[in-house]
Every structure is written in C-alpha cells, then in structure tokens.
Length: 175
Length: 450
Image 1 (cartoon, rainbow over the protein chains, first blue to last red):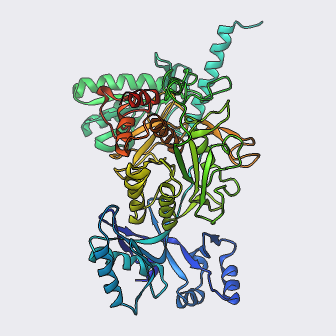
Image 2 (cartoon, helix red, strand yellow; image 1 turned 90 degrees about the vertical axis):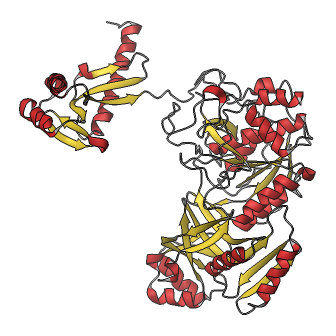
Image 3 (cartoon, rainbow over the protein chains, first blue to last red; image 1 turned 90 degrees about the horizontal axis):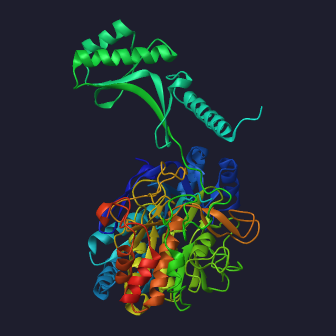
C-alpha cells in the first residue's frame, strides 16, 4: 500500500485512535526546498496551494504528477493528510512525552531515555526537562512520529506520548 | 373600497400560506396538487397541514393493494421502511381526496383495524421569526418573550444584584484572538498571549472575530452591550487562525502550551474554550488536567468547553468528562437544533458529557473594532453557536468565584449544574439538555450561602 494511504494509530485517553488518510490532499513541507522545486510545485498546484503554518501547505493530490511526487518523497517533504471527524490533520515529526497530570514522572522518563538510547539510529531527543521529553524520528517524516508515539505509549504505560498534529477544522459559522 | 384590517390580515395570511405551498410543491416531486380547500391550520396555528392525492398504508396484504389499484386506481409510488407504502391516486385535486377517503374506508372494512392507513399529509411548521426590530437584543440576559418565552434566560439582572464580578478573577479566552484595543474590552484585558505567531499581543488577524465575540459575552464594558461579568478580568490567548477559507488552523502542542500558560503565567481562574474537533490527543488532555489540578494554587481552574454545532456527538475536548461542557439553548428554552423555533439551521451537539445549556442563538456582543469582523461596527447582534453559549458559563464560573474565591474547581462545576433551570421533567440529567439551562442568579445565591 502507498505510504500516503496507510492507516496510522496512536494512543489518547487510554484508547487507540486510528487515522485514515484524506484522499484529496497531501501536505507538502516547503521548508528547505530549493527554488526550482518550489517553482515546479507552484506550477503544479495551479493556484490551489493552501498555506497552513511553518512552511506546510496542502495541495490536491491529483495535481502532483508522479515525477514531482517522487522527488518530494525522496526529500521526505510530502506528508499524508488525515481526515477524522470533519477535521484534517497533518502529523509533524515530533512526539511529546510526559506523565499524566499528577503522576510520578522520574522513573518513566529514565526508562524512556534508555530505550531511545538503544535506537539512536531512528530516534533523537529534541528537548528534555524533568517533566517532559520531546523526541523525533530521524527520518523527519511526520507519520513516523505517529508510529513512534504509539510504540512509546504502548511500552511505557506510565507516560503519555502525543504526536504533534496540525489541525484544520471547520470554523464555526457565527453571524 | 378599503378593506377592513381583519380582512387585510386574513388576506396576508392566505398569501403567505399560498407562497409556502408553492415552495412545498416544488420540493415534493409533484405528489401534491393545488386546491385551496386542502390547507388546514392546526388549532395552535403553528402547523400547516396539506392533504395530498396520496395515502399511506402499512401492514396491508398484497391482495388489498391490488384491490385499491383495481377499484380506485391507486398506484404504488414509494416503499418506505417497516412495510410502509405510499399510494397515489390517478385523479387530481378534490376528486383524488374523495377517492382517498373512500379507499381508506373500504380498506379498513376489508383488512380490519390492525392495518395503518391514512391520508398522506405534507406538513410544515411555522417558524417564529427571529428577533426583529423592537425585539429584545439581549434576550440571553433578560428574555421578555420577544422572541421566545419570558424567563428563558440566565437571569443576569437578578444576578447582578449580588455581584458583577471582581477584577481579581480572570477568565482566559482561548480562541483566534481577542481585540484587546476594543473600547469595550481593553480596560479589563490584563494579560495576552499569542502562540500562533508569537506576537506580544493576542489581537486577531483580518476578519477573525470569533474570540472577540466570546470575550464580549464575558466582560464587555459597554453600557448597551454589557458582558455578564463586567468587573472580572480577561486574559486573551490566541491559539488559532483562519485558513482563508472556512477553516481554523490549530497546532496541538501550541494549544497545550496555551492552556498551560493560561493557568500558570496568565493566572486565569476560568478557561473559556469555544473550539473543538477531531480526535483526542493526550498532550491537550494532560494540559487540561494540569489546569484543573494545578491552577489557582491547587484549587483548580474551571475549564469550560463548547459541545459543538453539528447536532451530533460532542467534539473533543468537550467529550471529556472532566471539563464543563456547554450546549446551546434558544429563546424558547429548547436545545438548539435544526428544527428549534428560532429557524437557524444548525444544532447543538449532545451526549454523555453534556453538562448544561446556555443561550446560543443570536447573541449580542462585541465585534472587532471598525468595519472588519461580523458587522460593520464594533458590536454584532447575531453571534451564534455553542461558541456563544460557552462564555456565558465561563462568566458564570467567574462570578461564582467572585463571591466565593476559595471554591474548588469541582465544587464550582457542581454548583453551576445544580443551579440550572431543569428542562426535563423531574430535573434529571438528559443527554440533550444536561442538567438544564444556566441560571446565574440561582448559582450566585447558592454560592453566597455556602
């Protein structure tokens, strides 16, 4: 199955959450992209490039021809967009690990540090303080962070591990 | 000749009925034909019934259907669920109605009383007009019945005899920004945070007026458009921005950080959240739990969330049992739904975590200053949704804490729900109404007695 069509899972509130890919859009990370590639992308998007935040944009899948898609994949710049409960989500390559509110933290984070140390070819620690760690997949690929968060939450029951999602939800119509 | 006022009114009503019929006719695939004698208005004047050339039957044998076809010319038009059939006469107008009556009589004779058979009516409800000129613009504070039911409000005027708040009590509005330069808000905004663009203020972009409208419901200083807790302070926290279309963009980590900032550095007592959607994520759940347990020096912040406006299941994080989840009520003390009397097409979400309702239809509040936002001026009369209901409850929590600052978070939640005006018999909790509609006066009276 194409990685963009894969179902991913993570843990939240003690339950498994499944994420289904949005068939219409992909996310493209423009950060660090060279000028020629940006130009090709703008031409391909035909004015339907929607800026989200931090260099991330949404583009209709059908606008990305296979050669361009391959180039973007090679740079790990194309991200699946998930669609759940009327909300579109893009996973960024970060996982925040912390104990649930009011729970002891030290032992859990120590064990996690050791576990990450054994996977230093796949995972890196971005920030660490006594109450929280932010870790990232070395691939820089957002969906890998979803899988990483899932693995951590399953292995370390005393910790929560959240992928970093950008959410695009319908704005309430108010007036 | 000049017609009498009574005749003129009658003529007006008939014209309105005919116009409504024409609308219906075009949407009924030709199953109805016009004949003035078919219009029937129910005694309460609220429902228009239109007899059609069709009949509905259920539990009828095939032989009886054949009989109706052979003797009366009724043809099968549509099969419904559970064995229902819609049969239509080949005649038109009054002749069809007469045939329908004869066929029904005959069918009952043949098949007995067990079968269901009746004329097929098209019915339409007259929706009361929303607040027109001269209606009460702040029905949420004091509902005089124009429109709605007198008293279907939060009893603000009575509550203000007890308190209008205390400046030491802070309500954080986590939203797409708050216009902190607004003349009706700037005096009470004591702290701001922007986690979206990192600005030193929490003012919104462009037409992003949602947060400013929420803030006004809580603490607007304007004499004509007062907030519910005008003496309480506001903390503006910008966590979202419009995407230029109809979407809102959120970053989960930033949202969690904004919640943490609100109770910690922002020193908020109450967190008002008129947003939600998509699957749950622990980073936000944990931040909410920290606010509830560590905020206010360990007494806990009251965290209020909107239920959502899709008329279905409650959005995350409103679907957490640990927050105060608010649905929207109408001036008629209904749960706001696509068929509630106000005539707006949306519905307030409901489900097991719904705590209470508060006014959420056409609320008069602040708009971003100038021509931007919902209206051309600095105020808007039509702020809608559980988004507008939520700050009512946040303001109520702030007023309760103004009276009893030592109360714990869980106690404030319990008090606000116990003080509701029940909307179901016996005052029991109901998935569509929670414990009822917010009654601010009742809540403050209870708080004062504690």
